Length: 489
Ligand code: NAI
Ligand code: MG
Image (cartoon, rainbow, N blue to C red; front, side, top):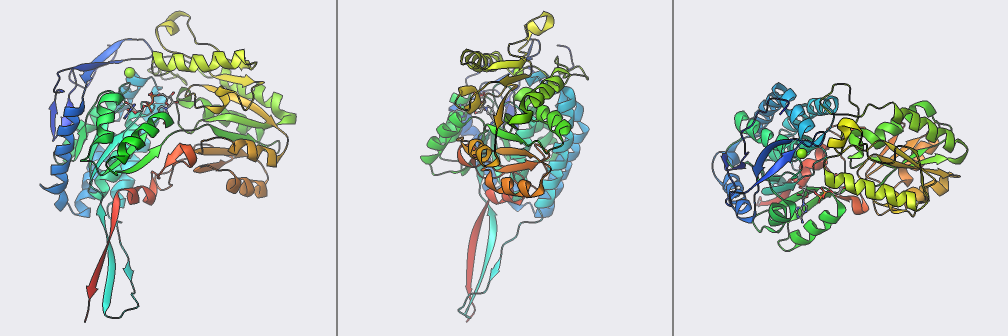
């Protein structure tokens, strides 16, 4: 262990305000992907643990102090939690860096944004409102009230564990729902620490429960559980389909954020230097393990080769290493499994005739050999039909795809099952507006990429998912609308 670890070993499940072992007594191990070092063990929750957690969440939703919390009290609770996250920012950032490899500069920045996100939800707790209608029948008064959906489940991935946990918990606390969270088996530590901070903030027992474990065990049990009113999932489209099928049996409300294969489109009239620097961030931040990564880099043909070279030059300047080093820009991939997956896509692309302008194979020299490091990779000569250009890789690989006309690039950018994000780089404001409308994606960024704000909804179209997170739309996902009619005669 290179750093002090603010947790007990093994870490328990959080059920009904208590830390408990899995009923089976089994645990899973957490590893540092930069070194292979074993960090800590945590409970391997299964179906019977999910049953207990759902029962606790149901009890907390229906009785006890939580249903009587006023909007003011829910706001105060969220503000206390934000303060605690801020006060423990360094430990939280460190946990994510140790557990899933993301550079400490990146995880510190995330905690700062997440504190702000919690404060946004704190404000939203005061902004829940219905309508007063004007029925044509004068003997009737009619209004709507918004009520919490109930017991929520959230299943989250490993690429931003604290981020995903706070994004799921914030609207639950703002609206008066309760939550059972299933972190990813590759990155459960910061979600568990969030549980500890939530108890400290005064979140009543059972309002926030955490069942760590495997997707096929704890995750599948949650998705099928009849005691859950709503499930939110972030992860792969394959697992999203399985969760939707499981949720159908009990008619749960469902929201899915399933990643993508986002186009980032460069026109010759753009600020090309900025576009090249940002194309690197868009594709390689978090070692490419970002749902909206701009991995299909469409570039106008006359500038394509020069632009690819500029991207490779900026990528080459990124410092790859252990995320604990303050100067590190890119850490390792999360796991041996992810490294094998990324390497597999790469090898197939090379076999099919693509070339690597930079990168192309795992780093193995010296200390790199102990971890799961893959360098930023720019593919040239790739075709739209290749699997590496069609499927989400979730690693630092982008393909440069030359195009000849605006019409063509819109058609090719949209020729994907996904639709999460899209980038446009141009100096032509008319084109920015035209493409902003024509691209089928949940978010379009013009002369920027991955811009984010608590007040702006984010989510996918097509196979990238359904529902929106952030903003008022996110609160709506957690609220039912009840119509109340009163006869006045
Ligand atoms: P995954 O989608 O299988 O895992 C995400 C979460 O779902 C984890 O908590 C996992 O335990 C859970 N899970 C897995 N199977 C489940 C099931 N049958 N029922 C309920 N929950 C289940 O992703 P995985 O296997 O870790 O990564 C594989 C690929 O998925 C990546 O290479 C990437 O392409 C994609 N992915 C996309 C993410 C995104 O944000 N778009 C995040 C993570 C992975
Ligand atoms: Mg780990």
